[in-house]
Image 1 (cartoon, one colour):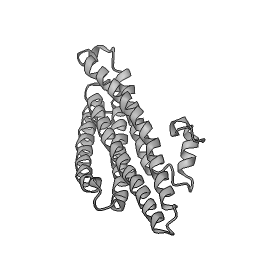
Image 2 (spheres, rainbow, N blue to C red; image 1 turned 180 degrees about the horizontal axis):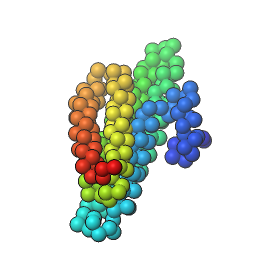
Image 3 (cartoon, one colour; image 1 turned 90 degrees about the vertical axis):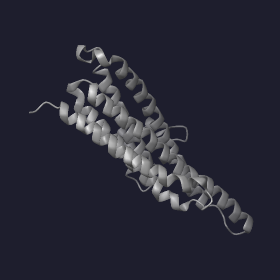
Image 4 (cartoon, rainbow, N blue to C red; image 1 turned 60 degrees about the vertical axis):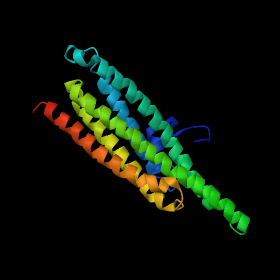
Length: 216
């Protein structure tokens, strides 16, 4: 992959091969974003399989809005998958900077601080958007095509994984932020909020799926 391409340009085989390599970029943060993007795509699919059906006529507007929102979240998560890879690559580059002189050490510290802030900010944003996908999955699980309700359930589980996986990356990078960095103080509260939100929304989505799946 050249510098101008993105993770979404890769085939599935190329992507999984890169993830399986010894290169730490892309890593878990990008994988979490991609999981959320796949979940958003499944939400869109359920919408497409629902709109226009007589049994979904009363929910047409809500479903259409969910479809638009899912597409927006998918695109955002694909962009964030690349941003996460760039952020961690910047961390590694900053760590390799010289530190022989005081000026070197100061420049290295500045570069590392900037890179680490991004390495926390980006996965936190991934988690926020994936939580939106979870809400959309719950919506389509409740009012979408009953024949596609299992797809809504898979979307919810992928989005929940995206939230939790992204937050793991926030957690591992957070201690490396300087004590006076505002994000170091604000992030723990956001982590707790998003974890609770993911649990609540995943539970709601899967409950909706369970009540609408036809018994075998």
